[in-house]
Image (cartoon, rainbow, N blue to C red):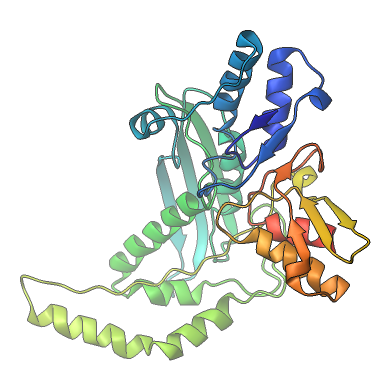
Length: 331
């Protein structure tokens, strides 16, 4: 039995079973809760669980591993640094016509989750904008650093930043504020992403217009310009960034959840799911789902620790799916 600070108990179970030559059914992983994660414990907690399991089987006694903060920082990867090259083509009136981009991802010494992160980079290469002609290429580069790993956004922020930087440079060349180019090229219903998916129920323009009115964008921009003309040693800036982000896993198989619900003779309820609590409140959400479905006081619902013995073959608690997938399973 392993207690692991992981977002992915099934991965820990699978790797430890392989390491020890056991069936997965002989390895139980329990996750009480995490003190935060944001992707960093989706894959990189597995190695330490495996080391503890190997030590326990060899020594015949419990083994506990807790990294010091310097050890943790030295040995675990973070968000992937990227280097990118791009070319951007626009019409005279500021419409995006073509975009060519190459992403170089610093993966570190092993692949970890880098290929999946690179996929999401490509999916998000045009951000919230419609570009009719796109060529996007991505390389995962092996380097002599600890493997970089999942981090909130999972390759999407790196991709969106590049296009925003390109728009900023284009705006400077055209002598217009960048937000005018952004506004002109926002997605509409029916626009097609570079990989063929059609945008449906697109809210980009509605969000932009509501924010523009709420923050009186044009007047704010004029105030910034007036200030900058009158001040040599200090400057002000104004920027907006629309975000279009795909929730759920790019690996379709992982978009599933499971739950085990016990109803006891006194009317109390126990709920086990594959969702890992890491401060995002997923246990409270599971309690709320069960309470609503049964019509009982929430104090009558107990949400158990996540463990592979009660809910098997779990997807990682990641990609903003933990509450939706496991909550629907609970329902």
